[in-house]
Image (cartoon, rainbow, N blue to C red; front, top):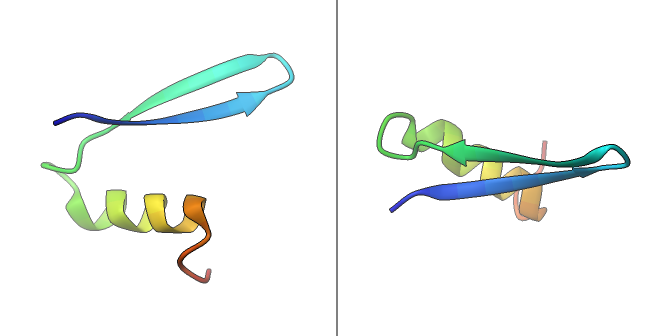
Length: 40
């Protein structure tokens, strides 16, 4: 299942596809940081 992240800017939205099957640790870190459930 594909995961997507949307970055909202004043010039429009940027949609990023996250490949958890290729980089599970990186995707998990990105999602947790974006949701605020993980400290930097």
